[in-house]
Image 1 (cartoon, rainbow, N blue to C red):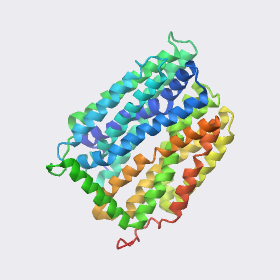
Image 2 (tube, rainbow, N blue to C red; image 1 turned 90 degrees about the vertical axis):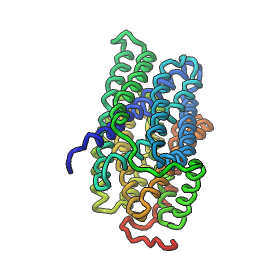
Image 3 (cartoon, helix red, strand yellow; image 1 turned 45 degrees about the horizontal axis):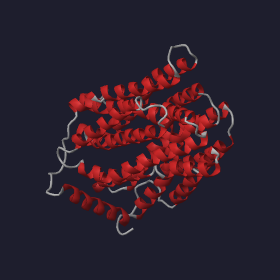
Image 4 (tube, rainbow, N blue to C red; image 1 turned 120 degrees about the vertical axis):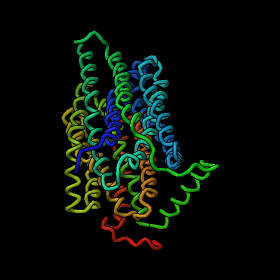
Length: 422
């Protein structure tokens, strides 16, 4: 496979740009910063975990509601880049604003975080949709994978800088407080995100699309309803999406809530940041290995194995107490998360009819967005009721059990599905 063209590379660099947000804001420094702010305001650690879970659920719910209509609107000529710019700017501006929220206003901090997540997730809807505009069909897998690879690298570079600054501040090696160092990290993340989005803004434009209709929003809803009816006609596809909805929610919840849980266990900020950094380096090669095993043993078997191991991870997480326990937990998660996401996509691609590929993949993305609401809310409510974070984490096993059970009912991933009246 040849190297990326200039326009393909410009597109892929957005993954490089926005992954800094995923690593620094969603997964590591902001969750720890929020817990510190909440504690200083007199709140209980377990309650801060619950509120962090609620915030993630609210942000994802808003994007999930918007995603279907935004995705279909992106098909209209001239709309895609305009919507991308709106959400991208919302994301970087509010990410920088995290540094300006007074430390005693923890609720305001959560509100701004929800806005950052809407900007990030909304921009990704249109970023994904640009793939068809930057490359040919035979190169899509390669270009998409390179974007994935760029994301892993791009997330670690600014994160290492921010992590070093927070750790040095913690040990009083630099004349900054941990709070100030964290706030500077949010600004660095926003700048990184903004600067490396410039190639896409300058070189990537919408090539394909449909003519703008008199009532584009109404027409978009009609197309969504038609797509949903098509999916309901194909039982194997609907069953897989239902299974995916539950087990990927569990996967995403563990990623989102890991830092808050580690902090509740008393693990130091330094250890948590180092653990999550190493997890990034483990995840990418593990995804490749997972893919190779899927070629040998089928995607469905690997997904079921992944669901089973994730269920064991939930049980293990309930009992962990030490930093070493958390290291083991993080490495297990890192070895699975990329593979589960990658194989889910390829398994689904083998189930759907080729002549409706883009239409059906639109629903795959919609289910993925909705599948990040229940888990954080479940962790939040169980933690708040019991007062113990480990019970909240254990509750995630319900998502894997349901997802695994439904997945067992889905046909094998070889294309032998009858698309008649299933």
